[in-house]
Length: 285
Length: 290
Image (tube, rainbow over all chains, first blue to last red; front, side, top):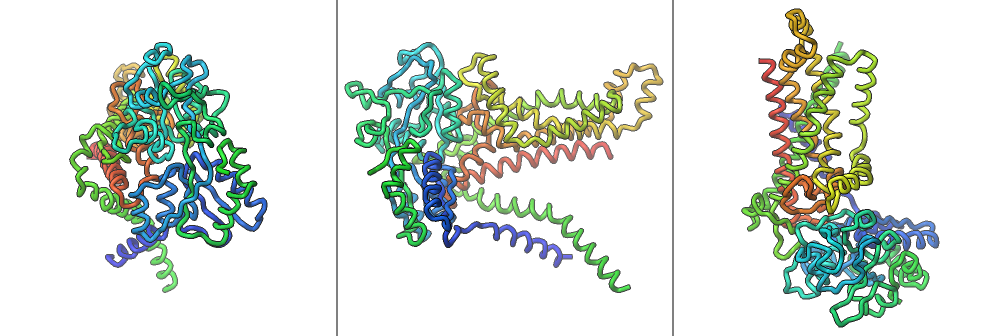
């Protein structure tokens, strides 16, 4: 009787532990991370696979944090990350024998978007911070028509969320402790924000330039009242004059070799950087 | 003779193992949950976990207050229960007691099909139809509210409630109803005062299992309740549920971090909630047999 029960438990435990997934080896590359960069990574993967038919590159999203977690646990070869890796994450990686190596692969401007019918068309970073921390609650406080502002943010696993918090809500000052208002809706993807913006006149949200379409109005943003108001354009993001622009990174575990190295080299070729433009990001070269 | 015995023994053991599998899995899951989740209570966040009103898991220092999440799950569940129970029970009564045979077959198939719709599909339909409708009808800033989640979840709970309640109604001996009718009760009086009363333990069980389904549902609420971790003031406000929090943040949480443990601790809370609900369903059913 007891032997049978032990047998069952052993089988169960066996199934339980054998489920860990390991990164694929050989010619295939696993890329994981930022949702902002998923389309970019996919475009690179397709371009690369066209030139190297024997290679296989798989790209999945989930958020920058997800990518870093996967790199640390060894379930991906390249992590796509739309913010810098935190010191805490680097320490954790090193404690598990993973040496993250950083590559800046492209630039991205964050667009602040509202419904096309919204009468507000420009905001300063201070106003944005007050809106997203919940100090400004009604559109009429910033020159719009009466209506409660609906805040749309990304989930906490998103690099875009973290970047927006650090550079807009806290204005790049790490000693500040501003947080997103509790009432902010946390959407699971940039596309979900785009969809809600396009049907809700009271909503305001933010996402990478790649998601801008005719169904949303992009707000002009200024660093302060005396600075020029700008919408994100390729030139302004590249020159650094647009305030909410950020580099996009890829991380590998140590010095990469084989297919991973070959793939990263491809990204920095003129052809690879041309792909960046095609998916509406800003090339670094 | 011996081969027959061996065969018999092998088949018996195979069935025995299958029978134990689900218990073993539950035990393993609980051990795993407990191991990971209780680690949170060794940290300084223990006290704030159940009663804290702020959920900022990735801030420095992080805040792991799940009260808004519990309230979010509570609002959605109560809403879904209020909607699905009367409709579900009424539908079960109609199918079991009133409907002609043909209609009965069609309705039963319909309920089964409703149960078979994947939750992500329901969530998507809710997002493009129900959410804008709620915003316009109630003049709300946004339609991504607890109400949207409650309505869609009511649709998911309904098949469970209908089919189990219908079984309970069918199990009521025919003679109860016949006796009531013979005493001069109208058909409705017979159903309301006799059949429903006699089937009530089974119906309570049906309701509890339906609620259990609602509490545990994730995809729909993640898509249409807005996921704002603030204390909900009404059903017309966005909420964030326990399940959606785990699903949205599990991918990000680095194994072994406080955030990771906090999500497992939420898992324990959810497990306890559904455990209590299922247990009370079992109690309700058991009462009938005594």
